[in-house]
Length: 77
Image (tube, helix red, strand yellow):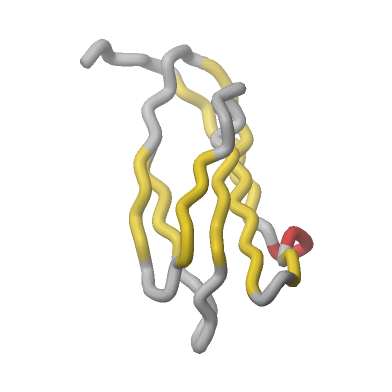
């Protein structure tokens, strides 16, 4: 799964992504310009991805992005 994070103009929030599959949330760090992150799912299923941004100590969880997706196939690497 590829996720592109694009911060609002003149912001540089710290972003954490919960991939919704039971793995630990991924700390992306400061995102000052568009950034792409990848995640590999180990099993098939439906997952909710949540990206949460924080800036200057203020959590933007109300503005967090949640996306439902279904994984139909898993490929061994």
